[in-house]
Amino acid sequence: MSRQSVLALAVISLLASHVPTAVAAPSPPAEPGADRRAVRTEPSTRGDVTFATMLDRIRVAAESGDWANKGWRDRDLEEGLNGLLEQAMRATGRKGLELPVEFDLVRPAAVDAPVGGGGRLHNKLWVSREPTASAGHAVRSIILADGNVRVSFATECVIIARGAVEVAHGQRNVILAGHYVHVSHDGNHGARPRIRPPQLAPERPEPEQDADEEPPPGSIVLSGGSLDISHATDTICSAPQLVEIAHANGVTVVNSPNLRVSHKNDLKEVQAEDLTLAPPEAANPLANRLKVTQVVHNDTVARRFAALDLGGAEIVVRPGAEIRDGAGKPVPGLEGWKLTFVCEQFALFSNGREDAGFLAPRER
Image (cartoon, rainbow, N blue to C red):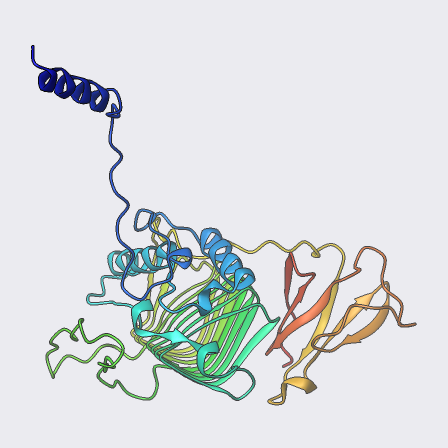
């Protein structure tokens, strides 16, 4: 055998000894412009995501601040919301329900300016750690709160809150709250064709829509405790403890055994077993420790308050204040509990980890 042949055999043997037994599949490429650290690549099965899972994802995003990165999105949240719409269509018989806004059509609110109080959200994403995230106007925006949300005018938004949500005027929103939702007017301003902003997603054209078939103006409103709507049109709503509507027109109520409606037209009640994203019935860890005797609502939030009965003494607590006795001292066993939300006859207390919601009797 020649010297060249011997060298060739040696090289082949050396290469063969370093060949691995299995080759791992390459990781999928990240989406263009996305932050790899902020994008989840293993989505949950659509329809299997629960409200508790969503709250965990919101808490992680709020604490890490990753949501402010360009291209951030959470597959659990997206899959859960799309699964909810599929389940709602099956339960209610309504066709064509779709998310009013999607993650690829919004930009982080923190990129342009801080938002709060009377601020405006337009095609924005806002993940809040504040006790109550407040905005004056929100249009085609996503608001995720590890607390409460208050918006004066909300159109085509997704709003998810651990605690409570208050909207003065809304249409075509998806609203989920762990304890309470109040909407003064939902779907009462007429339908308007959705417009997808082309500068945010030029690669995804808006699906063609029949000019005579506008989407219904009502919202999907789900609460784990109670909900209260003054005027509702084409709204889909659900709450295990209480659904109270003054004027209901074309409303569908799902899985709500305690329903109070003053004036109704074409009201439909249905039962559904597979609304996996609907908030479960909210527990109240202070139910045996606290009694709320009165809730005073005011258009000026700072003037709202709750009156408590603590061992026979009446105590007034205002938003943001800790529960204290008549001498201004902490109440044993209630240390750290603050009034975080007041609206209509509802008061929500929180210690940062747990929430306790109370419905006070309405004054007649």
